[in-house]
Length: 214
Image (cartoon, rainbow, N blue to C red; front, side):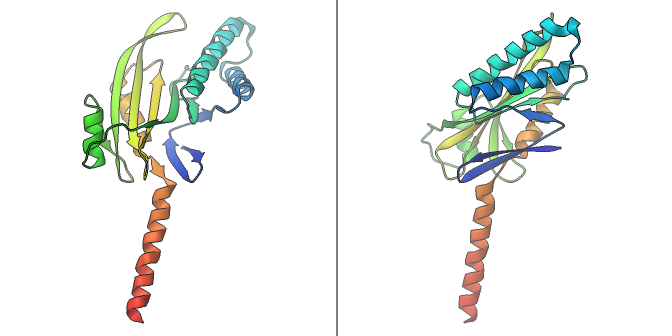
């Protein structure tokens, strides 16, 4: 299991990704292109007969990564071993977006109000996430294959923003199983701020105990 950590100033979030994933740089276009080109060579080999397919794959991935940058992505990663024979089984993108819902209530209620078509799921470490899964078809190489897009929204602690994560799979023959897999990834979401709060709370309790003992 690989852990992908994204640093965001004072607030970090962590996701546990199954298998091997490759992070793509988002802050420098040239670094992004070099990283994609290197991954394509590793995943597809150097057989001259695959030269045109490698070029097509590289251009497609650079385009997808470029769109992620335009959308303000803070993280973009490619799955390298999700499906046998598929060099890039899924792409994960994460970014922040404003949470415009001014409604009262807990996070689960507000998410349900903001995303009425989504399912509200619990996170392993506490909190919740809204999930919307969309199955479709997509051209992969020369064939139409079943594809899957799963979108998630989770409240950012002490903020009026949401963490938006999308996972797209160009080949998802069993969409329910893939959705469960991606649900497990988002279920692992944790924030460093939660750890800091636990430490502060413990210190407060300890100081109160000391004061009472005195």
